[in-house]
Image 1 (cartoon, one colour):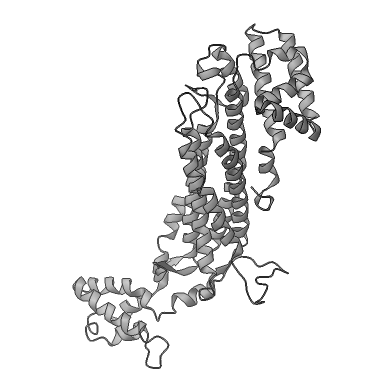
Image 2 (tube, helix red, strand yellow):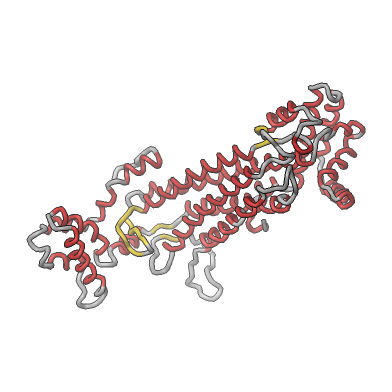
Length: 449
């Protein structure tokens, strides 16, 4: 991922230094397990640990260059690292990687990196949840127009809209925890996964020390269905980000103006038009979500490896693992900040709600007529007639409100009392279920209206 969309903590997980530290830890733990089993001298395992720890603590750019130089000759990244490590450890290095194969190191390391990355992503989700909860309770009873097909439908609560996104991100958090549990898998099984040269207790030891589970059957590689499920989880989270970002983009449109991204002092919206305040954060999130979702198909195609292994998945994962987690980490941080500072305009929401002359209350009026004894089909025809008379003459001198048209309609006069019609036009009726919904989402209703 380009630096513009990278944050230091997540980027560090995919840096060569961290990868090599994990590789050494896997090798050292395997040696310690072998020593406990009496397969190698305990003194050799201690030497490997002490000298290796010292080498990793002093790891520098010169060490990176040395490993790269070795790989340029060997054309093999794990062998290059092991050769460099042998130079640091000395004769006892003959016990390093004993009976193991490269994928034991690579796949187990990737599991560690993905779990490290996931822990950061969970923190990011928690920040998003905190921002959404703040907005939900701040605007629990803020009336706004609900839209279907982007057309005014019926009143709702802006807080309820935020609560809906909160509930989605709670589900996303659960998905990510599930993905983390599935990806946190260790394989130290040797060539083609038969343990021919390794005691399975070595794998158990390494897995326990690294906080991983063991792969039941690693065919020299950990099966890639785990990784595919992981990137599907990231993609679903990205889609949730885009859904919320799209909502903000629409609410910030000039003709809507119900909410907008915080505009910083000194910020400029356009190089040519000084008045512009563009939804650049939410648009950026939309683009990042597309990129993160694009990783799903190659991750799914990685599942079908040949026989016990091939490396057709390798180039894919070297790209999508860092890019996917770094990109999502950045997106979650940006979304949390955007929603925490979101500027909401309740007065504009109220104005928009009534901007169509009251026709958004047609559903409640329809029910009032039905309760008064009018057949539903007849009631629908009457209400639609009054609504269209209002809609088509909005802003014109002869225009009348929906309530006025209803009050003068011959099929309504004498059948529905004026106070019933007035009650049907009260937007606050659409808030009656908000407390119950908040209890379901947050476990608490919040302050009374």
